[in-house]
Amino acid sequence: IVEWQDKTFLHQNDCRLDLATFERMASRFKIDFAFVPHTGNQELFPLLLSLSDEDWLTLSRKREDEGLSGFIESLKILKPQCVIPYSFTIAYHNQDQIKLNAYNRTTPVEFQKILKKEMPETKTLILQPGDVLNDNGTIKKYREENLWGENLQEYTKNIATFAKKEFGEKSEFDFGSCAAVEVPLINYIEERLKESFPDIFANQAVELVIRG
Image 1 (cartoon, rainbow, N blue to C red):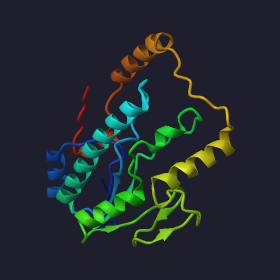
Image 2 (tube, one colour; image 1 turned 60 degrees about the vertical axis):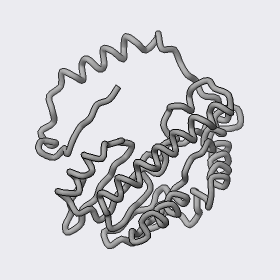
Image 3 (tube, rainbow, N blue to C red; image 1 turned 90 degrees about the horizontal axis):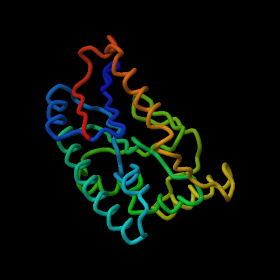
Image 4 (cartoon, rainbow, N blue to C red; image 1 turned 30 degrees about the horizontal axis):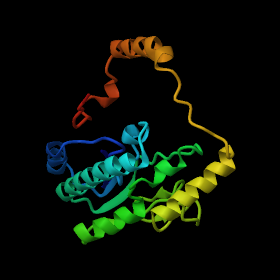
């Protein structure tokens, strides 16, 4: 949460907070602009598991429904003046994974339609990659092209076109080797845990929840 001049901004990114945390946020802040997730299907689970298309569709639908329900419920608690569905915009670019972008994902445009039904009094803005949100709520556009498209099919087509142009037609995802990175990863985490807590964050964090 950032307070700047007379405006308060929430950037949730990919953080899945519990409802009690949102209630504490709402009791302390009046959110003007909330940058929030618009899909639960951009995470690595279940899309990087070796599954059949049928199992991918089933698992991704369940995850998306659960995610959307939680996103909407949290927004009803926060009651922001304006919602920007823009956090956590990961996409799959490798040619063997392009199809993963289309498994029951809710695009920002589709999220806007859902929110309009659930919270018709709440304003929503759609930012394209590169756009800048001015403090008065207007958008400084980086491009006129609508990269999100009007639906999931258009979005997936745009991703495929971009990936082919940038990476070629034969790019494939390299899963790497767990055994090769296990020791360096453990050493890195142990070193990070020895570091002190940055003073700049003192009294600023609402809550940190570690799961798993």
